[in-house]
Amino acid sequence: MSGMQDVQILMQALPYIREHRGRTFLLKFGGALVEDRDALASLAQDIALLTAVGIRVCVVHGGGPQATALAGRLGLESQFVEGRRITD
Image (cartoon, rainbow, N blue to C red; front, side, top):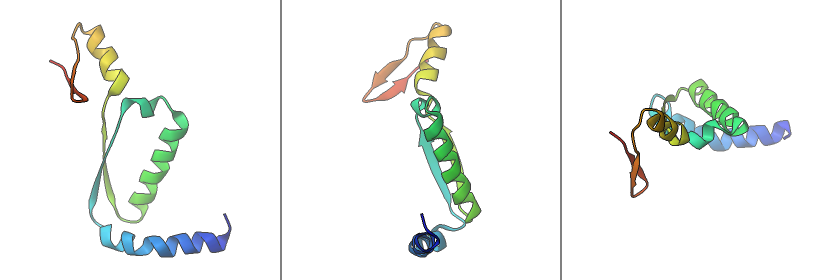
């Protein structure tokens, strides 16, 4: 990407940065993301950028396969209701 393209992207983003500076974004991601190192690295870069422009970020890990594996090791059975995990 050229320097001019970077400037154009930044100019397009500025109104959104101004609007959301000082706010908190809640990001929830699933456990499958943890297994994809490139996707996880990209997410970390995005979070760093948001933080750098004054947007606070709260990250929630959904658990996914890791939660299912842990429940199994603990002898708990996970149930899924409309795509949501229900575990004792």
